[in-house]
Length: 300
Image (cartoon, rainbow, N blue to C red):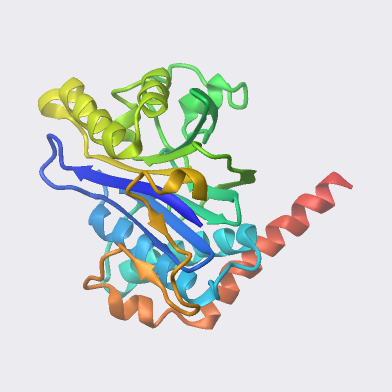
């Protein structure tokens, strides 16, 4: 498995950076994750970090060296991260819970599968065109898609996230078979709120990710000005052996079985992640299976 990857996060005009991102991989699988801690609630950066560490810990546990069922894994991992944030708030006796958006993708073989909750986005660009992108869990985005009809909406209001007292809503998509030169970009809303889809695609299409990502982030910060949001981007370009030698990419072919590499930083939440027990994981998976069962019942 071979890919080029580049990531960057900037504080912008905010007092602190509540975005978190990172990737990890084994010999035959890769996980890319980005979370945007939500302002207006306490410790958004903690929610984002805890989401990353929870999903990374589960991935390290299950990727041996691949994930058996990527859809089931991503669904269960999102719920496990949500439960960990709720647990953190409960143990600290917080009156309000930390909250975060999330977007995460798994690459295995030549396919990509992803999950998202909130308005952090994933884009896939192929041959200079937008192949697909996630649809935000916001009233404006859903209204534009003809799903929800509300009047007098004048801003992007999220109706779901991780850490909320209500059960999160999330979407899983894929697998999409990647071709040489395909680019996948994960970003917080600090990027796309300043730059339109067309500009993001244009920059990705014309440059390698190590050049395109810094340019996109700088442009978003410039347009956002002194009130710019945090801007965080993690992007990957899929490569084949013929093209790989001329780029500065990651090759997992030389990694021994059982080895796990990660850029997701450890932090003060390690003990909670280490204590992620089977009951939490089983409860998360059980909730997913129950939702699938109810959906199937409604269709019959």
